Amino acid sequence: NDPAPTFSCCGVKGITPFGFDDETIRDAIDIYLNDPASNEHGPINCWDTSQVTNMSNLFAFAVSFDEPLGCWDTSNVTTMEGMFQGPRLGAENDKRSYFNQDISSWDVSQVTDMSYMFKDSYFNHSIDVWDVSSVRSMKEMFARSNPFSHSLSSWDVSAVTDMNGIFVQAMYDGDISTWDVSNVVDMENAFSDTDFFNQDISSWNVSNAQTSGRCFPIHHVLM
Image 1 (tube, rainbow, N blue to C red):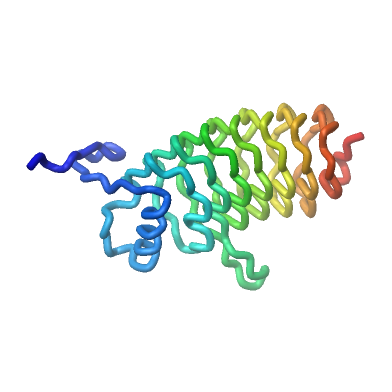
Image 2 (cartoon, rainbow, N blue to C red):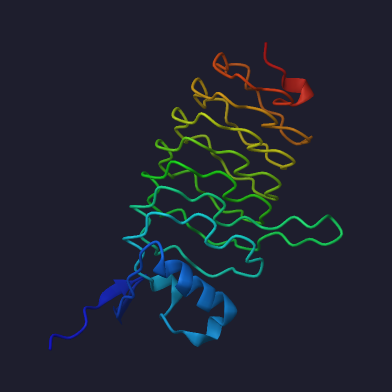
C-alpha cells in the first residue's frame, strides 16, 4: 500500500491531512470543542478544508475558542455567515467570542456572505488584504465587535447590497471614505448607537439605498 500523503502545514512537514467537507467539518469541530485535547483529527490549524464551501456559524457561540486557523484553505468557501459570532447576554455577563487570531492569509475571494461574521467578538487583527469583491452581505459583520480597529480602506465592497447594522454599537473609526457603496440597498442602522465613528463619508453614493434609517452618526448625515 502507498503511504498516506503528507503535506506541510505552517512550516511543519510530515503532517497527515484530514480532509473535510461541509458536513464532516461540523462533526469534527463539535468533537474538538467538547474535548480540545482529544486530537482526534490532528492539529486544527492543519485540517484540510480545501473542499469546504460552507463555514457559516462554525465557531458561533464558542466563546472560549482562540486557536490559530491561519493555515486553513478557504479558497472554495462561499459563506462565512456568523462564523465567529459570540452570544450577547448583556453587559453584566460578557460572553463575546474570544477568537483573535491572524487570518489575513485566507482566500475569501469566493465568499458572498459575511453577515454576522465577527458580531459580538473580540477579534482585532488586520484583514485589509482580503479580497471581498464577491461579498453581497456584510449585515452586522462587525456589530459590537470591540475593539476592532484595523483599516478596511482597501476593501472592494462594490458588490455589497446589504450593510444593515455593519458597525452598530461598534467602536470602529477607520477611514472607509473610498468605499464604493453604490450598490448597497439596505443601510439600516449601519452606524447606529456608536459615538466613535468620526470619518468623512460625504462622498458616498447612497442613491440606491432603500432603507437607511439610523444609518449614519448624527455628525455625518448624508444628503
